[in-house]
Every structure is written in C-alpha cells, then in structure tokens.
Length: 101
Image (cartoon, rainbow, N blue to C red; front, side):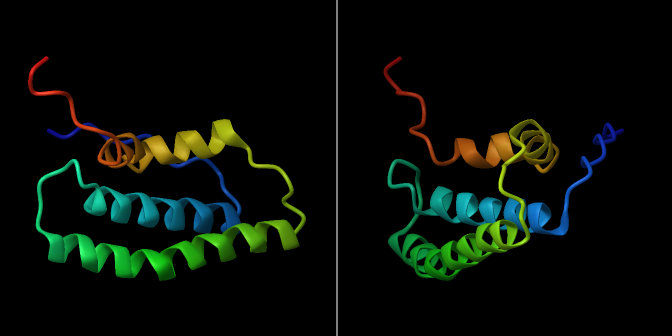
C-alpha cells in the first residue's frame, strides 16, 4: 500500500502558481540536462517549451509582487515542493554520480 502524502501547506493562489510554474521549469531543465541520457530532439522540444514556462514563472512572481506578497516564505514553499516530489524532480538537473566512483 502506498503511503499517504502529507497535505500541501496553505498557500495563496499566487504561491501555488509560483510552485507549479517553478516545477514546470525544473522538469524541462531536467529533460535538457546534457549529462543525462536522451536524444537531442527531446532536449530541443524541452528548450523550446522552456521559453514560455520561464515567462509564466516570471508572471507568477510579478503577480505575487503586485499583490503585496513581497516575501517568499521559504519553509512553507519548501514543504509544498517536497509534497510535490520537488526533490526528485530537481535532482534531474544536477550531474549524475560519476560512474568511476
């Protein structure tokens, strides 16, 4: 039986949008990572999509700023990222372990 995930912390609509758009960008960067196996076409498609997703991330941050949400509540947003599997998704951006180690 799959363990139940903890609930997402309470987020404003703008914070939730920020988290969603951030993870979109992270997923695309993971697909582009040249240190990971894959084909160039997949990376090209991800790079093309990255342009619009980065703009959406910018817009989410701009909306937070416009609404007066001037501070990022890192512990709360980190908890949301963990619930949404952000650690595994972000790990795809880093270099994989050295095969010789």
